[in-house]
Image (cartoon, rainbow, N blue to C red; front, side, top):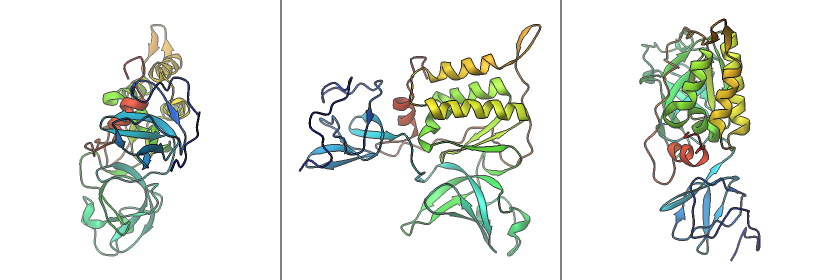
Amino acid sequence: MSQGHRPGHRRRGRGDSSSHPSRDRILVLPGEELPSEGLKPGAGTYRVGGRLYASVLGLLSPRPPFLSVIPLSGRYIPKAGDTVIGTVTDCQTTFWLLDIGAPRWAPLHVTGTPWKVEVGETDRYLHVGDAVVVRVESLEATGRIGVTMLGDGLGKLEGGTIVTVSPARIPRVVGRNGSMIQTITSHTGAQIAVGQNGRIWIGGSSEAIQRAREALEMIEEHGQRAGLSDRVESYLVSTDATDDRGPARPPGETAHRDAIPHELPPTPEPSGDFDADDAADDAGNDSDGY
């Protein structure tokens, strides 16, 4: 059985199945057979008759003993430990319903907040449309997504704006050890909170927000290309405010908030064959060291 296999279809630079150059950017299509000698199926792949195939459009990511495909786009699939940005869609007597971009809404119970909320008074603390930073705490067999607001860097966001990118782009948005976010905040003065569900909160002056938004749009559009870090920094340097002494870095802006959005959300511990760090290594290895 050779489901999805297209004889003779090979991509330039693929090489033979015994080599897995981690820095090569190999785009694969759903159903395409993958060079998988000695590797096990990871995220974004499936096995048929001893052969591995891609289940999504994405970048090949060999991480022995697993072979994964990092999707270029797609709906957010929550994992326990993810830090996400959600918006309130409904207030009930003891919980709020959050839209976190997942297939199902996530209830935030009053016990998962730092507030002492009386029954029936949830709308005194969060209103429909409010944005919050929460952590995915549990995933139940029924599909229920448990979230909490208890923890460092979590809480209600005030002001600012939310930009949405593909969840697959988040490792590129953050950068190696937070390098990309640091580049954007240092040049714009904006404060940024990143959710692993593809939502990014930006706070600060209107100019800071606009420049940070443009940098994020650049990452969304060119995230699969090499040299992205240099491209983004060059843009930010070229748009820096200047005075007689040269480029002037904007001062850090302060936004009223309960959370601490300029601190990057914690990255979950590796979960077997694939995690955000893998995506950063394979989908974001620029020649500039990102």
